[in-house]
Image (tube, rainbow, N blue to C red):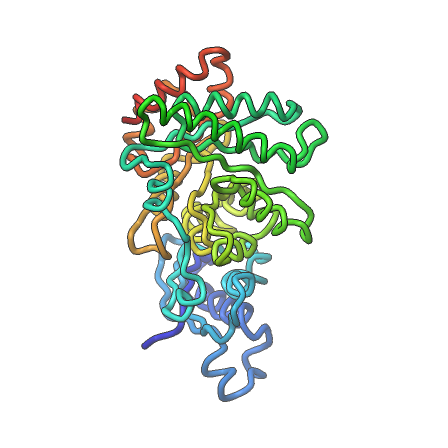
Length: 375
């Protein structure tokens, strides 16, 4: 059995030979980080050193190179896997990660999401159709105001009510006061939904925000308080943070990943990661169950093809672990729901914030209309 995993890079080079030299340089840089002539013979040269497996042209000055690596270079930490994948080479121009094929050894170490699409549907009771995901915002509001907003969103038929990523530990709504209050607000709304014969329920996802040494304590505080899931920003707190919680036997809550601080990794067509890799493959690898990304036509400039590639990487059955929910957001409006439903399908969590709040006292009706449009 081949235990080597493979990473595919897009390389900018004027011709094939220079592309080949660049690819061989990546294989060295990502493993031994020394000149080829001084790589120790035996295990290091035969196993640890990256191997160029395939090189093919994409255009006149762009090439696709697939390099394989040994799991022995990874150890057991996700951070080191990402380091092997794109550590020092991320500092060089003209190199972009576009694909990742884990080996059985890697999938044993990093099995992916705990819940995925099927698990989220089981928790919400929403067996089919897109999920309605309104956002609690803005920062600066008191805990009582945010709790009332959470209650109204949940009562109106939301599937997941998530806090905005900017709700941290501000004095107006301290996180350890806010979470229990919004848990209670969601519970009241769900009780009324049950009384009205609704077989579905809203899930509440608070934003986790803490100093490094307090992060896991806050995650378990949210769990004990009754939160249904959590929102984490891997661009700020690390992909390994998601992975540790996803694999922790006592945590057992779904994780929603937010793209804050990750945009610079994907915006260049020549450097960084492809959109599908960053917001699809890496999120599944880390163990996220839902991946938020900027929607086409909003204020962030992602194209339709880029958004489709993200959604595909999230939901494809042959990806890492369970398929997860893509969650397009940013500039979403009720008028665009039919268009977006046709684009993303039913296995998506549709994020909506400012345009819902713009409805004022008609917010509940807007969520109901969103539910109807998705169905």
